[in-house]
Length: 123
Picture 1 (cartoon, rainbow, N blue to C red):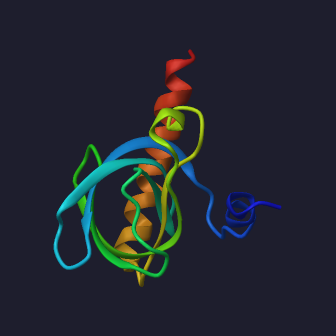
Picture 2 (cartoon, rainbow, N blue to C red):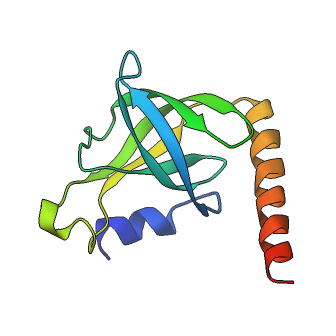
């Protein structure tokens, strides 16, 4: 099993495929990228400017309703040659560190609303 498959199989929370703008940095926010999936426990930032596994980050996640601040840690990082970025997974997996209960409630409400809006689109 490759590293990415191992990461996917060890997840505790179901991921929601989406596109959200995320600003992040080590001591302060100084970089940005798109989150392609998010869960109660973490997210995947699509970037080729990856940081090392174990790096702790501050994150600002831009949901349509509001921005959410989190602290996280890089759990995996994959950099690929630029000409393969559209064909291969790249980026960083971030695990949230000690998310507060308000985050869990917000995320579950957002996920439910997103699922309901997608159901309504197919009618």
